[in-house]
Image 1 (cartoon, rainbow, N blue to C red):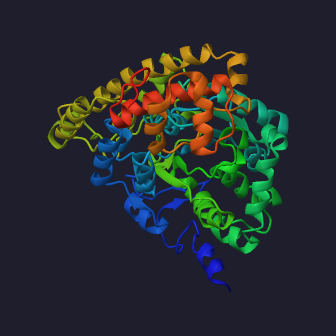
Image 2: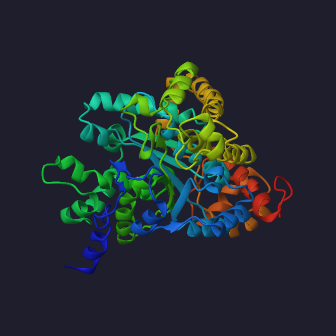
Image 3: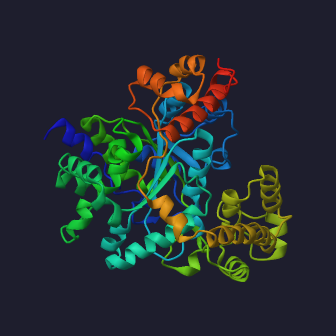
Length: 468
């Protein structure tokens, strides 16, 4: 057995098998009322905790207040996020990659978490984002026919677009439709496939002898978008680092990916891991799209939201009002409070709710009311945004195209802005300094605007007639 084989076989998703928590890409359960023990999970998966030092550094480098998902430990674990911040600090660029497995017509609130966070990251770092819709995976795992799987992918894409992504920087694709039209994608899948043996992938993902062969072949499909060469129409075959925000149950795919990419000459993807969004019935399992009573869907009416929260949301309160006033509620198991951690942005109000509920001042019905008042407008706003997503807008996001991504070292911006006097001269300067192919006039304008913004951001220059 080679050293490489030992390394990749050590990536088994279930540790030694004596753990109480089960966390795989297909199953998440815990025996504890408080849910998954994430500190143990970090140790088992070998990732790093997102600590105060990383959050402080993030704020210092980006000059942005960290998202409440970071401040509250909802995104709690990472791989190589310091490397991403180093790149940004040096003026070097990267891209974002996340995905969605479309198994239902409508997404639920839990599905929004990675997309809300990716939207914020895209705005902060001003980088491209690729979003993979794994309709092929769902066709295999859920036994959905191909045509239906594609339809689900398109319906989910509209929900994703409604989160407010920048169409100039975002590419969304269906695996079942895109891969056959992108040779580079398929070629990278083959490169990954021949780098991982059957025994290795079986050890990582726990596949059995009776599983369809498609399951065994799928992991390289999810790994390939973490390689920038998979998208030559975006990255012009440059080797660009990748950052993947995802729930931690997806980590086994990318531990495999991180082992393979250096062998193919690409950087290891960095990751940001989120906790699981609990089901209405409690934190022992994550919310499921297959059970409508465990979830609030993005198509639910205000009345449905109210009824689901009041009827199904697991309470951390006491059996009687008298006991609750005396003993207080348990926020660690109360689903209404846990959901407020995700969707109530006001830190001070959340703190007051926690103190009031824990002390017994706030009753279970009252904390559910607080949640309902947060969720109803949030879902209504999303529904309004989605109603405006036309087929033309959907096509724009899902058409392979140049996202204006130009790799240029920040050290060259000083030179360019000192010498640029007009758009007409920018092409020769860029070619001479960075060896990038000649730019179309429209791309040159985009590049000039980007450099002007970057100069002001990083060097204090004013750009546009006042180069550094």
